[in-house]
Length: 98
Image (cartoon, rainbow, N blue to C red):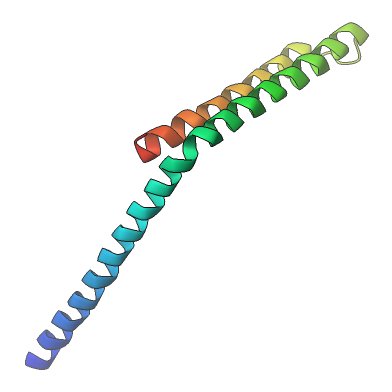
């Protein structure tokens, strides 16, 4: 029984040291993400603008050519894509506490 208790304590100490290193690694990664977030945020907004322009052009062309009967569905799809891209930035800010 004493041998099992000693083994348990050694295992607990090893796991504790590994978890402490993991927390330091997560903190370091979080600070690096915070440093790179402002340029990435601008990139996300630029990508959303490009997606919106492409989507607007595609919907306009399909609306004028009447080649698709589901134009309102396509509008919702493109708007949903733009909202999703914009919400990624908000989600990352909330995730890392920026």
